[in-house]
Image (cartoon, rainbow, N blue to C red; front, side, top):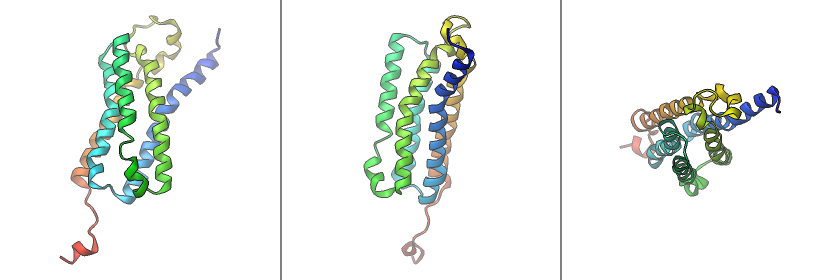
Length: 177
């Protein structure tokens, strides 16, 4: 039988990809994107990236765990993992090397975060005691609604800030007009 300390360590390990993904996203946005600004194609691309990450998590929130729903989740998560790398050929020329490293960390965290949330999915829908081994993780059942809320707010922020608030710096040529 595993000890309570083992389950405590496992809880932190399940949350680690979610926290690491969140921190790397914040560094990407508030360090790298603010420093270089975003080209027009990223104004829409980044909120779409966030939406593809959010969609499988929303699916979990509104769908009971089942073989069919897990298949939909896996397909949506795999699509998201592929979708978020769509810009990397351009980023190789535009980004500083440190931003590319941060992006690489994000790309490693996405499937790990999706896997962690898949393991926690039954907790969100199952009554207490329904799945005995998962009861050790019962206090993590709020991970799904918290993650989906954070991602929804982040996606709204990205769409509003980069498309309505942020103004591109005026170039010397434009200033002379």
